[in-house]
Amino acid sequence: MRSGACAPVRGLPAGFALRDLATSDRLDELVFDVRLGDGTLFRRERRDSIAERGPLDRRPGCVDPAQVYDAVLAAAGSRGVGSWLDYQRARRDEGHALLASITGILTGSIDLVFRAGDAGERRYYLVDYKTNRIGDSDAGHYAASWLEWEMARKGYPLQALIYTLALHRHLACRLPGYDYDRHVGGYFYVFLRGMSGPDTPRDPATGLCLGVFGDRWPRATIEGLDLALSPRGDAC
Image (tube, rainbow, N blue to C red; front, side, top):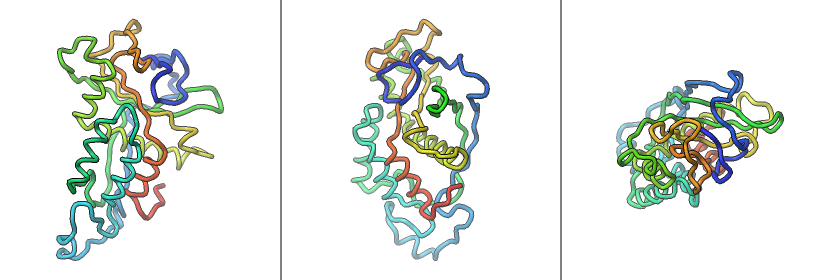
């Protein structure tokens, strides 16, 4: 994977390649636990009270479904996930929930988290590897427009959103002076079937190699989602 200047990802050095990463600058298979609502401190409400609530209502101590949508749709205008956001907006207007009013612990694993940039200006990025066959799997089917379509079709923006939130919480607990805009550069979905090594052509629309989808969630979305998932705070 080589970086380009056109992607919405922030701060990645020109000409950067994953193969150049030092071991000290990468974490492979980073396992995380994200608390949903009150997590293990949840106490169940009376069953009849729960049954009366609609899909976008929140139970005390649980995820706030309406606030989840407010946070996600704050990213309107993001080039890479526009079609997915349009779909979610329509779903919300029909009364559906993106995340229900649930509680517990969400466990996941991020393929790769790495840091890059000059000392004092390093940013953190996450990577997810995909082996999807898109169309006929020729090179043209791994250009930006096709990758955006595949991301939306598979619901990968939600996965990237949760991964980014997990990284945000991790850095907030561990990195002195952490600031989302200063330290989080974005995320990459690397579709391996569209890549052919160092000579992989670049997509003129993004500056990234074919098969590489790069984007970044805005601060308002990540902080809003953080509050919607854990209203009582104290994510660390």
